[in-house]
Image (tube, rainbow, N blue to C red):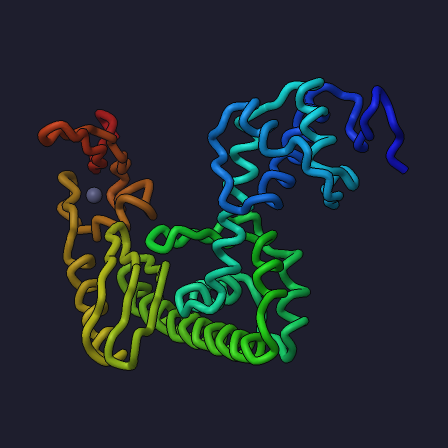
Length: 310
Ligand SMILES: [Zn+2]
């Protein structure tokens, strides 16, 4: 379907100038990368042209079949967005690195990690792949290893695995999902326990994050009233519950006293649940800032007020 115009074949490029420019850059990057996967993406236009010119092998691109020679002529006619070419080539390189490294344990572990974040358990490998279309557009980066996984390249990687690797990935992903489900349930159990305990004092508790490393080691992010506790806990689940219950008691002992009637109220309750003291005094929350060094801390305080004559 390519038609000849001005001596060279014209690809299916858009008439809109911006899209056209992008198209030329994409085709250029595809050809350069095909000719040499180690191509230096930071070269000048004329150096790219030198690489492409006289290469007559036809290559399938996103815009149709073309050769290096044709694209070189296209560049000379249309110009080239070298930044776009560079970013494309870098993307192809990182994708290639990823597939080249597919045997590395790190990549497999990252892959299981990424998939188990968004997948439901699946009986089959294809069942996992089918779920990718519903994944959020979130890039999983492994900074140490210099690669990133997203919903596009994960399909490329998954396709390159052998049957044996596929079976092992499926097993790992399902195991991780099962572990997350268990942790979720234990985290929920912990939250229910703290909620029930907090009810007595009017203090809300939430479990924001819960990781069960093993049965004697937990990672937690818990809010007891205003206080956030982010910590690793060395001990049994029962000991963890007891420790958090003590934290809750401490929070419950943090009280404010109404200056009008002397009533002691749990600070968290006065702050979040009450508008008035039993004696009729209004409870107001006052924002103030406190400067320590260069950092300004926003603080809240409680004031009991009574209108004269009330
Ligand atoms: Zn009072």
